[in-house]
Image 1 (cartoon, rainbow, N blue to C red):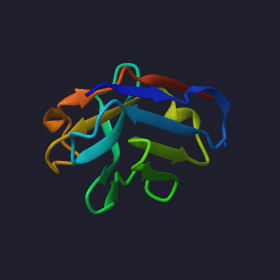
Image 2: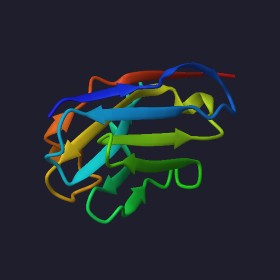
Image 3: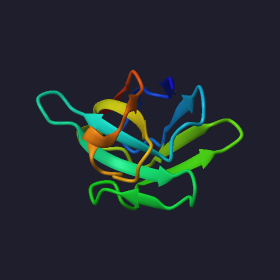
Image 4: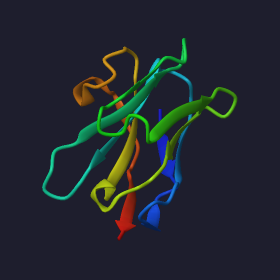
Amino acid sequence: VQLQASGGGLVQAGAYPRLSCAASAHTFITMGWFRQAPGKEREFLSAISWITSSAYYADSVKGRFTISRDNAKITVYLQMNSLKPEDTAVYYCAAQMGWHYSDSGKYEYWGQGTQVTVSS
């Protein structure tokens, strides 16, 4: 499975961009979003079950970010609101056959990452 992330770029604080991640095939159960800022570890943000649509969020983004999916397009989205400079990072989408949604080590497939830079 190949994952293609898009939607990043340079935005101002308070912006509300939407990231997209398109999969080449539907051979997974869970898709998730992570991010990694310079000098920091990769951080779990959100994940969604392709079977139940159940969604989970990290406390750091709960209430600001929303994950959704489009079955027909095999695409997952991350709507980000009220961005802050500390949200600056490379954002990655990932997919796995299980439901260890916050464990980056359980994801078998990763997108190339898309840079989001938030200016103050």
